[in-house]
Image (cartoon, rainbow, N blue to C red):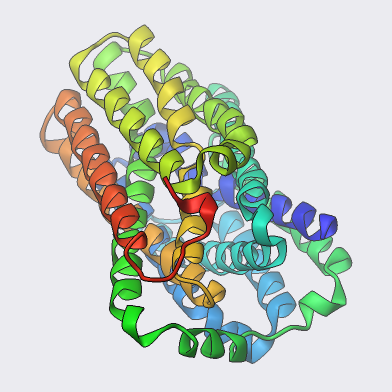
Length: 398
């Protein structure tokens, strides 16, 4: 099991680098191609739509080809697409490459997430938080790499860094994945789990799933919008250099990494529901303060706290939902990650449009509105999960 967690950490490290590399080099990329921020948002949207398709296809592809084959294919696809990004093809080609890159991300994240949750049982909060920590480490590294490459005029090589890591991770999964896991094909146990849910509670289970799915749309949309446009907002509002503004992402992902180191243990102590409600409320306060204040120093400080409070939400909400709707780990995980990718496609597009047509202040208020919606959806999910008629795991309760 420790080997599986190690491989999961490497996979999420690669995904963290890959999903955030566009944001790290957004400012020079926009200028190099002579496009607007909304066009950059289109690239992000295409990548996340590809991820959405990869996530939704993952359970079917897993049944057909097996986990190991699918994972290796995903890493190979990522490496090829990132090398293609680094060659700086025409913008129209970049938009075509983006969904291919995302398809690999989506498959890998779904497969690894479901394996970790199913394999760690009551320790799923801690295990998923550890794996998510490496996503944060990847996202923490890429702004430093991006800033250094921007300074020497080689920002496009940030994509090459991601491609090389994908190749390394491909080799590790090829050599170290246990045969008992790699040869497994999902499907039958999922159908049995779905059939075993009490009919009297089926409607409530669906309601919980629907609200949790909306939470993932909102949460991932918020996170991806903030990290993709934070450097550009700092450049516009505070006249920072592109390289300095990009380092703000390191503050965010540094806080994310610190938070994820303890999120699983804190959630186990407080209960998943209490943890999620508390962090959603705290995040709303942070984004409200960000909208009401100004100045680079204040934004940098608040960015740290935003990362800290958002850090454990994805992993803990994933476990929370699987416990609230038991017996369908792969299907539930696939659906929730797909919804997150949908949010990651839509909300950055809206944020980019806001930044093009309004000022930075309006975009910050947009983030505050999204944070409020995030709190409301989680509150609804907690209320519904406590009414399913089947005792939810104690670690989920308030």
